[in-house]
Image (cartoon, rainbow, N blue to C red; front, side, top):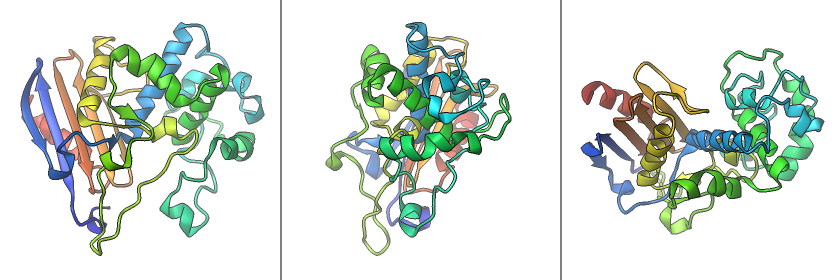
Length: 288
């Protein structure tokens, strides 16, 4: 959180009809560092699912239990419900944080092996029973990631490159960037603030890194492929198609107007959750 970090930085840009109208790059954002996109990663996972559905490799309307039988989920929990946060699964797995170490790095224990052996068989007991009602779920996207990986035999990053980033010619993205390219945040005592890890299926919920420019180009490219429509996995309000994310000290927001003319991109380092959204809201009000 912001009070624990000595130096903070924010970057934002508004682009209208291809022209940059507002731009600010804070000190830690200069030089094209690799930034955590947080839950914006979910839109990539949704795009993979959509592309695999179009290729008839998976079926968005099929029950999740057909792809992952050990989950024991009801048959009305289909793959699309994972994408749209209407599956009835909770935001996070039960018993996620039981030790001090888990509180410091809550996703670290969720390797693929651990997730498959400890989480998937327990999903039916964690299911809320309410399918079709929106409830934002990181857990649902981790399950979706396993559906995609198990069905194709490919890991999430390989799928992301093949079905999303390579076709869009976006290269400055990674799930394991070089350490020297990731901004280092320090406490007031000078210690390094270690960021959360996403070693297994939660990579598809929030494990992507990319440059600020790549974040903007990605959002612009995806929304322009569905002009006037909300791309699968994105949020929508009266003026923007958008998504946000926050992984400990990294915050992100990207939104595109429904006509595709204006793009608002924000990333923060060292600020508390929600700061990127507030900056974006101000920019939306003042630059329309």
